[in-house]
Length: 157
Image 1 (cartoon, rainbow, N blue to C red):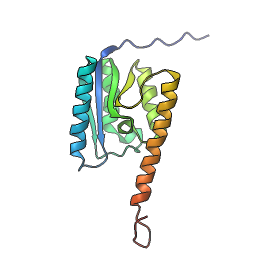
Image 2: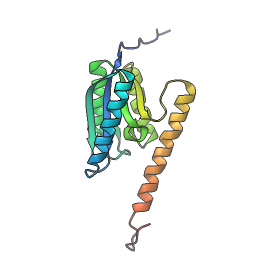
Image 3: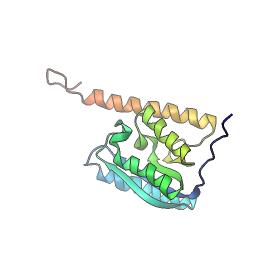
Image 4: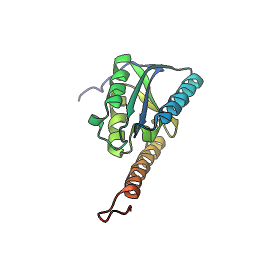
């Protein structure tokens, strides 16, 4: 039988922050996310060692199309940060699969995901609740797409 993989040693008081907005015009959204994460880190007694951003990237984009998120995951490993922090779950992803990929990468690095607003934790209930919230974020992304879709006749759905 193969021995259990050792969890990498991380610093629970070091965080990497991730911010994302879907459009270039949402710059105020970045400022609001940064302020919320800064206040959260101060309350937790944590240091944000790196800030990573995706500006103008959809939450439904594949992980490979998210340079800021990939940078954040790399920084978590390189800095041995204990936490990747985001303002809300939908900033990480509006896709259940991408969200789970991120969480698996964090677990492999010995780190966790913290949300300023939302459910986070590694107990069974928190994991299930987070999965439901990820599905709700995907639904919202699809509903936004349906509301703004231009139909062949030129009118909006």
